[in-house]
Amino acid sequence: MAVDDLTEPVLPGPGASDYERYLRTDELLSLQPEPDMSAHRDELLFTTVHQSSELWLKLAWREVEEATRLLAGDELDAPIRLLRRASLCAQYVTAQLDMLEQMSPWEYQVIRKKLGHGSGFDSPGFREIRRITPALGQELSRLLRERGLSLIDLYVQGRAHEQLYQLAECLIEWDERLTVWRMRHYKVVSRIIGDEVVGTQGTPVELLGGLIKQKFFPELWDARNKLTELANEE
Ligand code: HEM
Image (cartoon, rainbow, N blue to C red; front, side, top):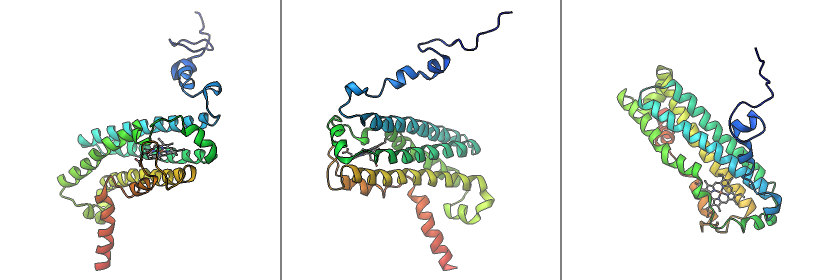
């Protein structure tokens, strides 16, 4: 019997090895500007951070979308695991912002001139996150309603509804991680282009600071206020 040569690729497609074929590394690595096409060598850093952020954001919103679909069928365990993944994605995307601060604010101006009207408001990842996240909150509300529970009951009774409690915590975690990203992004933007200027799509950077207050699940945050009031009354 012929023994397979394990070093030879068996998958179809371009690339010298199965690793390169499966991951389509030729295509992936051709997506960043090469030195001869770059206005500044830091374009590689800039595009790497943005492109990899888009990949993590895609994974995040797909997991949130699937979690919402499973919740609609009254499954709770798998959504909790998927939502933990989504929050981790948001943490990675936040951590990557550190790399942008390794660029000089003056040299970044060279790159900025090449961006046209390109703006993070058009980030496909964030657009999808904004589109699909509200439905997740609606599923938690439905599950609570069907069990005759308010959010306050859920938190006060805690372990009596352990799975639902974990789910509610996954939602607030997701909301918090997205806000932490916004806070970090605002500081990075302020540090690189300033906090009294307008962006490439005309948005004042100051307005980005205001977006930090936005919440996907305001009722989950408000429940904390009510719990504190309740505890004060006792
Ligand atoms: C040098 C680094 C960066 C600068 C100077 C910058 C600047 C800005 C500015 C000025 C805005 C306001 C909109 C406008 O352009 O007019 C904005 C919005 C935004 N940017 Fe960035 N950005 C940077 C990095 C990133 C990265 C790495 C991401 C990740 C995908 C990102 C995602 C976004 C998003 C999603 C918004 C919409 C704001 C929101 O929904 O809170 N940005 N950015």
